[in-house]
Image (cartoon, rainbow, N blue to C red; front, side):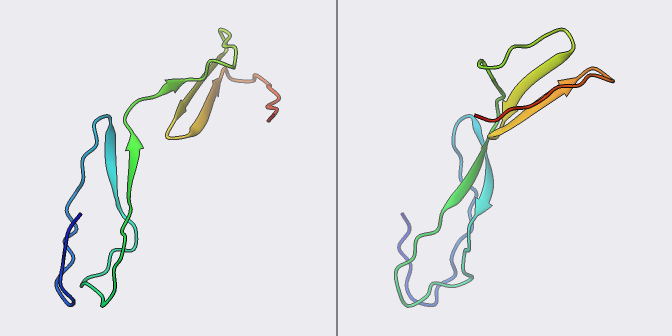
Length: 84
C-alpha cells in the first residue's frame, strides 16, 4: 500500500510475483485524486500447464498457457472440439 497526498504523482513501479511476469497497472492516474483509489496490477504465468482432461495422440498436442488452451495438430488432421 502506498499513501499519497492529493496532487502527488502516482508512481508506476513494476511489481513482482514469483512464477509470473508483471503485465501492468489498470487505469493508473498521473496524479493522486481527492479520494481513495485502488489500482490493480495484472500478471501472466511463466509456465505452461498440461491439460490432463484431454488425451494426446501422436498427431495432436494440447497445452494451456495464460488461461488459453492451444491445440497443435498434424497437417490435414481434422478434430471436433466440444466444450462442456
